[in-house]
Length: 113
Image (cartoon, rainbow, N blue to C red; front, side, top):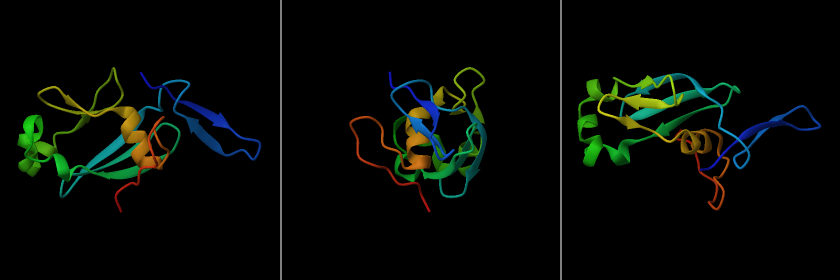
């Protein structure tokens, strides 16, 4: 399992080390048109992810209906975004995509514009 921790640098800027603890919890989200998801984390980081590449595939088949995609919520235990039917998104990947910080062993990711 990958872990993350907030570290305050000498300049007071908060950074996240994805190797040392859990990622910050998702505290706010919005399901947006065209299968995009905006999330805000407990450390203030936020970003928009384009999930359209998953729409209609396997367990994401229901996302073809925008009303189904709009049923997103925050799971009280895992603190990540989830949907009815047991669909949830990896909080480490969401944090990496929102911030552009790479997961260990991966190159940088870019948030949707």
